[in-house]
Image (cartoon, rainbow over all chains, first blue to last red; front, side, top):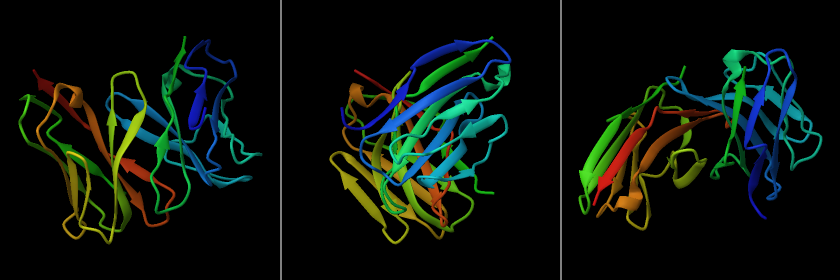
Length: 112
Length: 112
């Protein structure tokens, strides 16, 4: 299906484990983003990518790693999960600076 | 640092009313502003995108205005329906095009 898809939709992991959240878009958009949404903090930018092999930190990057070897994929890895990383994670994409951003359905991550 | 505020945080109206949601931002150096809707447990759906050079955008029963110099945007919803019940988020894109900063949202309930 066309669009932006995230997997898994739900994930429970243990403290200290590595976990990767996947994001795939079919539009060949240049820009891709990872946000986390928390009560009291709203949506905050973790990392973004302007093109394949180009990534940069957002507002809250600590504890996360991203890569973008292909335009359509932008995985987010929690190297050693902590309880404070329990959140809903959203991936988004945008073709250019003057175009709409489109969001995936989110991944609800619980770290126990 | 850009700060985006949405007032009111919650709003309950009877079906058929016209309503206005407000969004304000502290730094007027923005590239564009985007309005989203989010249903419970779902991702964000793009409603309208206003470029910094534009004053307003319309889509169906929705009209968004932008006053960049005063740091304000409004989303006008005409003839509200129960299906409009959702959280509405505004977000501003910085001039570098790499950070979309979100407001805390307005939770709207339209009663039949």
